[in-house]
Length: 181
Image (cartoon, rainbow, N blue to C red; front, side, top):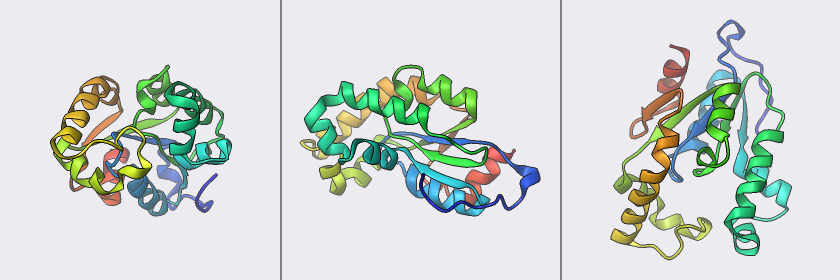
């Protein structure tokens, strides 16, 4: 488990488990930490949980075992983590698109898709590609094209989220209003 255990600020307004989904670089972890703090919820970063379980970094796991094994471990981490009723969970970018994950998350809480354009995602990801196994060799227009292609595949899953939100100016206060209304 990650982050501090907090008591909900307003127990009468608990929203349950909130799963943040979206493409890598959309800001799920940053938003998740701030939203959890704002609500007094516990924060889980599934990438961090996966790295603990694997005892290695995601790039190393990807390199050593491949994407298929990574997705299997990611599924185990998602489904075997014991979430309290008041939790914010940041997922990996591809997680909702494999196995039954989007349905599993929707049946156990609410999902919020943090949506950004391919160009905005590329701008955010350009300097941090070393830790992103799927992006390492992509630059400029090739990076944007890759993101467009992946989004075309993934949005069918992302768009099944409880909430689909423009992530460009999204902050914890706006996210709280969305999930509570």
